[in-house]
Length: 176
Image (cartoon, rainbow, N blue to C red):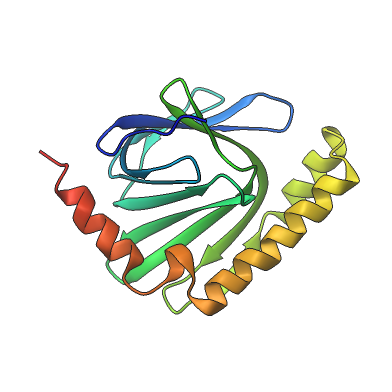
C-alpha cells in the first residue's frame, strides 16, 4: 500500500459495510504517513454527510489511523482539555488521495479525565441485522473495543500524555 506524504492535503472518507459513502472530511493535512500509521490534522474543515448536509468542525483535531487496528481515534483540542472520539471501524486504506474506512457505528467517547462511554450500540445492532454482518466481524469489533479501552487505560498511542499536543504543534507549522 502507498502512504501519503507529510504535508499532503487529503480527504477522509467513511463508508458503511454495504459500500455506501457515509461521511467525508474535505481537508486534512498529513503529519505522518506510513503504510501502517497515518496521523493527520484538521481545523474548521467541511464535513459532508451522505444525505448531502454539510457542517464545519468546531475545533482542531488530530486524527490517528492504523492499518492493523479496527478503530481510529480523533483527539479534539477543546478549552477544557482533549476529548477523543474513537470510531470502531475497519483498518484504513489510502487510495485516490483519501483515507478510507468502514464505519461500524460503535464509538468510544473519551473525556479529558480518561473516563469513557461506549456509544451507539443500538445503531450497530440495527445495521448488523440490516447488512448481515458475519459473526466473525462481531467478534473482531468487540475485541478491538477491548483493545481500545486498554489503550485508554494504559495511556497508549494517541492517548499517551503529550501525543495530541505534539502533533498539534506540528500541524501549526503547516498552516499559512
